Length: 415
Image (cartoon, rainbow, N blue to C red; front, side, top):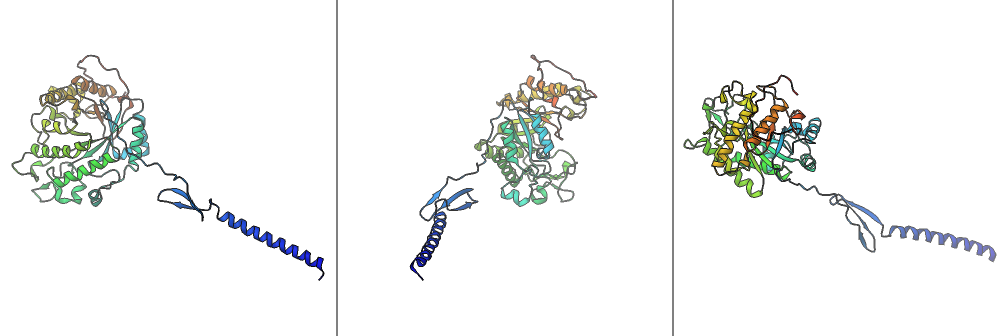
């Protein structure tokens, strides 16, 4: 081998070695750059980078945490009721959102626990989980309430209390019993009741109420806060001592609700029979009007004209006289509230928005609203068990400027 040939081969070898070193160095350099390896953390939803020389942390990209908010109580509340099924069904939910847009409504009432005893959305409470009373009817309760709040709509959660067919199956020791059979007592509609004097039932109901507030409901409305009224009530066995009246037993429950809810700043309301406002007693169900007033922020008499018997105020068909019936009952309610050193602004009635005893036109609904204002009560709640409302019921209407009796005859057509 001559020298020139050797030199050429050496040069080629050198080039190959240098190229190899450069490639290896490039790979190593790229690998150890600070942009380096990327790791993902599911716990904090962030991206972090590491290197052999130092660890560089990129600011965490955090998903916004959902914050429950509450709206102040409108003055006055003007609401319509919706079942949990309606609120959780897309087509009905759309109707609810449409109804509150551009109308008199500033609030809605939605079932948290209805007459069946089922709770309409998931809860964390151990007792609720243990009895299995949740039936998810409203899949995203927080999101729905947030959407209503965004429209300025106050959301009231309705809790049916002592009529509860579900809980008495899970906790039979809480039930009203039948002395004829020794089994659980049923009313004329075959519904089962929890005993109104059962303290475990009280705790269960309040746990549901508090959790409803925690997910965003602005107020808790307690319904069926009474002893049963229909059926063979004489055969019902209650836990209360014989020396304790139904009114006294219920008053203890009202005190308990107040003591549990008021310190937390949770607004409360209670539904009572309409005629409790004009009946001096407790209607045989324990609802004595003066016993309810001190313990709730609002008292809601169900003054549906269709529910009054023939001959009430000398009307053959009370349902055909919505102004007169509502005005009379709320006049007495306001007078009793004042006499009890309470405020007429606590009186917020349920009004009839359904056909029973008469076809209820928008004018008949509006005249109940007028009677409420004329009596000096504060706001109203519309009831329709099917959550179906004529939009004209809640469209702005011209109110009378002076108190006047307005008799509205029943119509056979819906306007």
